Length: 329
Image 1 (tube, one colour):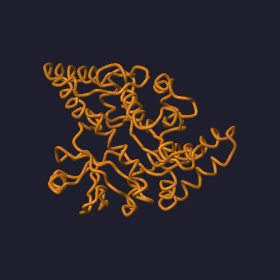
Image 2: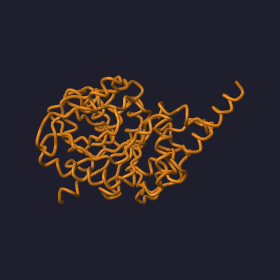
Image 3: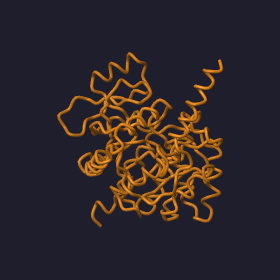
Image 4: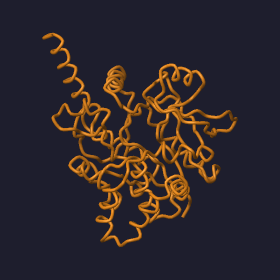
């Protein structure tokens, strides 16, 4: 097999979407953000699957979901083979949410090279992210033993995003100095002026390298999951349920990446209309851009079901209620 035949994509789709819950409950059902659309039709998860399908074959796309969201993801993921849908008993944070599909992939391909993609972001210039992810995967041979993060060139001193501060370097992939999570306005302005980047949570890494990160930072978590994978397939679901029942929620960026900066490389991604849609204001800004330039977003095709909730409609209903309340006050 050539090295590209070991390229896989893991799509994270188990989050609860708590930051946008006030908006996504407009339908009467609390709908995680990844199962929503911006303008009707395909969901953000469907967009992420299409994004992944542009860099790896569909048979090597693995999606991690939560059992409690089954009614949302089951119709969406009908085009994927069953073994590529990894079901968590519940959402216990991104550290567990990445380790479970990682071990699933490595069980099938010990030489796997992985691109990791969140499922609830929006990108207007898909070709920029596609080429950046391809470069990140190609870089894994040069950045031996490392992980390549995609840092988005910011267009504002945003306080609601995580930032990555690169070290000075003339190399294409920059060393990482430090992470800054959701800075205060003054700090965000300093980061913006200094050339820091938004943390997109998109990255590429060799599977064995990522497993080593877990050994160094969360060894007990890795050992617990590996014991579960050491059992037979017929026992795995019950063992996973028992494991998750006692798991502490851990964050991948804070508990795995931070402290491993020496092994991280940063690829600078040009402005591409990326947003995490984490607040109603970001949803509104994104929809405004699409209204001004409907051709700005050209999503690649991927066979996925319709979204459970249209964010444009939910936002309109929310704003309508706000106006009505103001008029009656």
